[in-house]
Every structure is written in C-alpha cells, then in structure tokens.
Image (cartoon, rainbow, N blue to C red; front, top):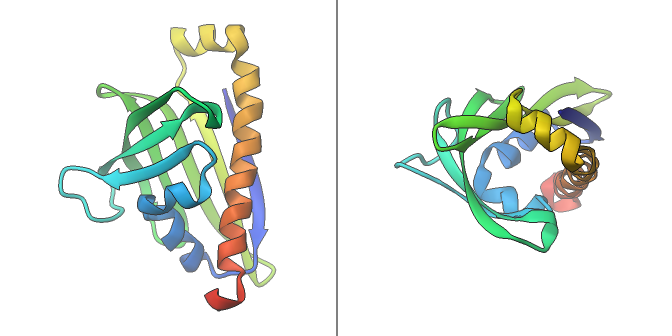
Length: 154
C-alpha cells in the first residue's frame, strides 16, 4: 500500500527541508504525531539516525510511541524515514523537494513494506487507512506551506 501528495510552496527547498527534517517540528504539522524527539544522542537529521514519534492514531487514540530510522537525508532534496517494529521496518515515509515555478513542489509519500501483515491489513480496512493517510499528508503539507509562506518567514 502506498500513496503520495504534492503541494507547491512559495519558498526555497532548503527552508522547507529544514522544517521537515528536524523531526522535533512534527507536532506542529502532523494530525497524528504530536511530538517527536531524536534518540541515542542524535541532534539532527543524518542517515541512520533514530527518533521516536508520539502518535495519537486517527487523532483520537490509541496513543503510542513509534521508533523510526532516517533513510534519506539530502538537504533541500529529500528526507525519509522508516517506522520500525523492533528492528523490522514496516512503513516508509518520504519527502521530496523539487524546484518549481520560483518555489518548491513538496511531495510526501508513504509505502508499507510488502508481507503478510500488509496483505492482511489491506484486506481488513487498509484502503480506509490509505485514504486517511492521503488526507493527513495533504493537511501536513498545507500546514507547512502556511508557515513557510507566512510574511515573517521571508
């Protein structure tokens, strides 16, 4: 299961990347993850760095922590991470930043790893989750856009 959403932002890619790649900002933008923190001495984005996110599923619960590992980290171009269950990645989130019309097209995407769990999940309501993720990715990107396009950001 996978999906993506793209929103054009009137801001340079580096400025948008800086907001997204510092996972401590996640709670400002995400409808479900209301806080995040770097783990194991990490102080910022770099390949392999781990962080955890505090999630309120569907904005109502249950509430739980997820551990994630950075998988893509190229300033101004891309940022990605995988959600781990133990040491096993189960979901991948990715942001791509592409210059467009004097601003930046920002694409957020998710891809669940293939396997029995994903197959069963798809059969038991996974499409509802996919729709929810699409809506929440759009909401996240629109919230980021509002910040980077605000007059104070210039």
